[in-house]
Amino acid sequence: MTYPDYRHSVMKKLLNDFFDRYFHDEESIILLILLTVGLALLVLLGGVMWPLIAAVVIAYLLHGLVTLLLRYGLSALIAFAAVYTLFISIFLLLLLYLLPQAWTQLRRLVNEFPNLLNVWQEALMALPENYPIFSETQVRTFIDGLGGEIGGLGQTILEFSLASLPSVFAWVILLVLVPILVFFMMKDHDQLVQWVGNFLPRNRPLMNRIWKEMDQQISNYIRGKVVEILIVGGTAWGLFVVLDINYALLLSVLVGLSVIVPYIGATAVTLPVAAVAYVQWGLGGEFTTVMIAYLGLQIIDGNVLVPVIFSEAVNLHPVAIIAAVLVFGGIWGLAGVFFAIPLATLIKAIINAWPSRISRASTEQEAEA
Picture 1 (spheres, rainbow, N blue to C red):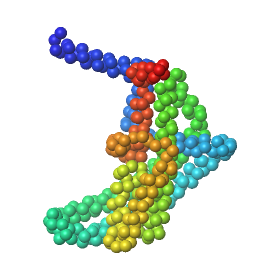
Picture 2 (cartoon, rainbow, N blue to C red):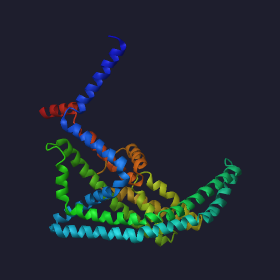
Picture 3 (tube, rainbow, N blue to C red):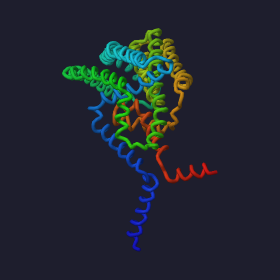
Picture 4 (cartoon, rainbow, N blue to C red):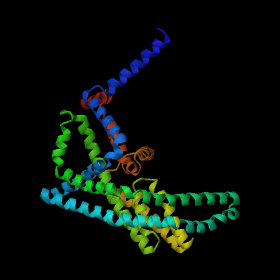
């Protein structure tokens, strides 16, 4: 046998062993096709389907609250009405108050950036005296570049505001469409689940195992993360208002959203909090108080709040979490960042539950022993 024939034979044997190990039953092949089609639809049509996807996620989360109320003896109609009323109330609060106020503060902050830059410039110009490794030319070049970037950012925000005016009507339609979709998905939950099940194999132990693990971990994670955002963001807003720091609402929104990304979010939001406090008070007692309060909130969140809220810990290595944030955030932006850990958990659940002749043989041997 010649070398090319031998190499071809080895590669063929490796591929045969791989497919025989992981695709030896019909359900695994069907699941692979469904996952491939679902991923392709998300990548290609995610921008168009995001209202439907958002409605599915929201309805899924709210159904857990409905189930909880049913356990306490409430009727299905009352539980549905109470949960949907709570959703509409929070939705309107975010839409009519929180987001407009935060956007207004963001535009005001951007407009004031040139004045803030003058304050920072004085501190930066002192760097060559205190740290000789920095030259005055380097500092001036950095300041000029930063000023240009800030000016461009302000212009971009203003242009975005003007350019978005023609699409306001489309946004209104979408904002009305999502609550309507959530209403019908919650109301007809059982019928929709049965309709989707008609497209799946009747005998689906693999899919059931994956769904059981995914539903337990992801539902706990997403619901817990929403609660954590509200608690951390609300507490940060209260602290910033008491400490009388500028842009309190905007900073509290950033602090609340920072918990979405473990290890990264809290570190990234520290910079704007410190920058605003420094410009407002300088390196004085007020600045120190704000930073101590902010760091204390982060410590309490990581060591007290998270263990209490999350009944099931997402057992993912920090490297896997960061990799998932980079990959899914790069594909779907902020939505990808928020769902990075649930999606990584789904991938982990699929890998753990995927049928393998070797793992099945080991399980059977342990059962016989």
